[in-house]
Image (tube, helix red, strand yellow):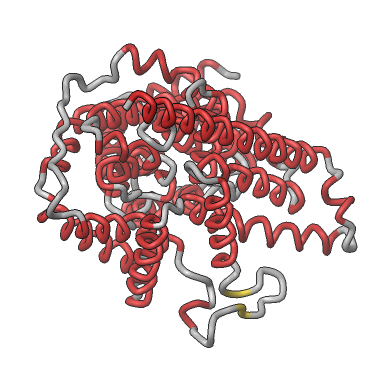
Length: 505
């Protein structure tokens, strides 16, 4: 490493105008991420044209600020109103919203912004010092490895199933069934579209996400509007307490490293990382029965993992010229606008630019942390709004978010349909998170399994015997077995506590 270029790259960012652009980007990103349907990809894409003519440091500072801010911003609406602002926040609501219902919204927001900062900073530092090494590992991934990664992710369904494993698996299979709607990934033949042109690409993911969580919560809120009590959250400190940090720091660090690695695999994404981090935190917890009911470790693990992905996704972009996710695909266009082509030649010919990007990524996470902390008190006041006013606002935002992705009225009907499905499932104590996980990973597993079988002349052994593939499949099997055993122990413990309480009565 050339420390002179390293220092100059950081000095170019830590000046007034570049820092101002980073803070503006982080603030805008948090606002975009907190609004359902307005993803980080959309925010970055909207502002790329405005970077034309700006110095590379200012341009990348603003765009990376939006990137980091939006990934964290998704947790705000997930925690407060059970509506993930971005897909990356889908795992955060599992414990964040129950904390809000207990009157601990401020505590959940504080640990969210803290763990997001640590995760994002860890990803940025790993990106700075280990980009070439991690890129070489990510380059080993072919269709077989992506299939195994998807199967490993699907094994997490048990961890997010709540009290009933059977109902969780049923919900997961329902999600896999929905994921088959649209074009066949290999032959291109339309499946289960019933002649509808709008279903050729399957149900749009963002409207489906909004329907399962936001609309279903609105329907449930209307049902209990007359009997529900107003929740009040007291903000005693902007920073999380020392006890909360002590309880979560191991999960934060572990999820940060895992999130960075998953982010560095092109196509994996922060939503997968969040669920993997959440499942791992639940697996190692001494009190796994608290997860899904307001465990602060769940919020910390999910947020540190998905924010670490921001740095991880930049690794293949800078080192190989291959975008790690949808946002970095847009950032690739920003580099090209600047007359630069990411890849090995960028490291050879423009190391000053590379270090400026490293510095901008670190500064973006610092800016996100500062803006996020200052906004905790303001964000927490949202739940003090009367439900009779809050529910129509959530409903309206959900309508706008569903429509905004493709400017399609059909997507609004998709969201409403999945809202009804989510409401009915929750009324019957079926978890909806496995559906979301299956929608994310189902297409990835199917497409890559079929491609790898075609490449290997239909030999399944040639697919599963590859070292990385076998490792992921073994990890998935272990995760599945341990999750089932842990869930059974939790159910037995709850049954014993219930019986003891009945005896005391």
